[in-house]
Length: 510
Ligand code: GLN
Image (cartoon, rainbow, N blue to C red; front, side, top):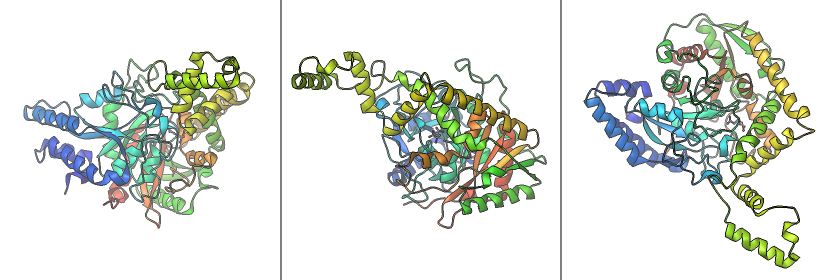
């Protein structure tokens, strides 16, 4: 079997048995990327020399009996929203196209400390805002199963890279579905851990009360391995939870307790594609065959999830993105050109005209910088968020959204008193064609129907492959668990994957 086909767990075992070296793994993946990433576009940036050097160092450690961890030498890809010291971190935005952070995100530091090889940075919707990776300003990513279609988003590059066997696993972030939705569209596993389970230090902020980092992998067992590396409290992130990390990689394979799975009535209503619904029904049947009890439950406020999410996420984004002003870091407009334009305007309209709106030169520079470097979706979110936070609208929009968020959280608390996990579709449809929803943001936002509520409630969620449409596109089933019950989630997913082979299929790529 070729090395690119192996899961991370298989690579770990092969490295331990001396069947191949870390350098051979990295070399195989680099060749694979060279061959197929032209048509997929998963990576924004590769660092082949650095990766090979890390792999060589890993081989030396192993030969000396000084491995940093059992995963030492296994490559991983990072969504380009995680800061990497000395390496550009762009968020696929023109604003940060030349930004080189001086430090590593905590997650990146933990990966390095475990000896993983950092293969490259993957594409995303600009600042992680989107569901198709079409909002990316610095690259175009396509679905490995059908190049006319989107990979999902915003962690589209990470999902596509894993699905196309360019890397065994990758790191993504999920604010309203950005790990689970692309995982569903590309046919991989994607885990959004509980809010606070993984440190956000050094992860470029989108919506700080919702953002969470997590793994994309081919199997739940691999996701468990990776979560174990990245999870845990962090003194540099006050919102990381002081909750001990469980040995997920061990508990994942333990026998499956007899679980009660809740099927949310609201998730099988209008908007759900019939083929997706049928595949999810079959997955529910498989869980029954595994000993699960199915119970119908209701989340009465879930219909408000998308609106609530977009208000809160946009409000937080408008505040988080205020720091991109052209003065501190990142892009700055060409001030000489701006000065010339102002002088021209003054000549044309008379000396005082250019300052009619009261702008100082500094304000003009801020404005011009942001106008030039943010893409249309990011601007839309900043405007929406600023509006909803402004005096006179705050109570009607932001405050109201916070109140509904509480109700949504209470809905989950109530159902998790009756069931161990929830099961349903990850997305209303399979991957759609590029361009299909670009002009209709509200249609695009509906893609978060089943995922965003988990972020609002802060609970854990996972998507795993459960079938294909007639046209050959992957379908994802979503499992949700109460906060800090990742091990239950991963174990259920693992046992499902022991029974099914959806996750073993590979897209055909030339
Ligand atoms: N699709 C959602 C949005 O556009 C979620 C994005 C995310 O999870 N980062 O905001």
